[in-house]
Image (cartoon, rainbow, N blue to C red):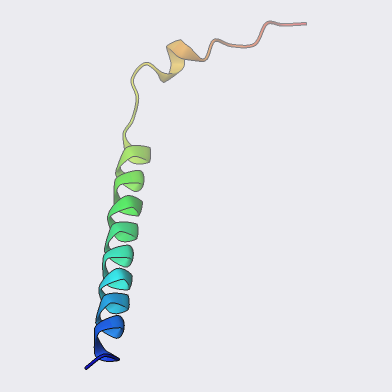
Length: 49
């Protein structure tokens, strides 16, 4: 029983770490896929030399 408790805790830590990593990557993917209508206005064209 004393060996089982650390294994369960490590298993839970890995489970929550993987779940958080998956949710974070999904959030970043959704953030990057959003089209910004003001993007052209924020990036002015470079001046001609």
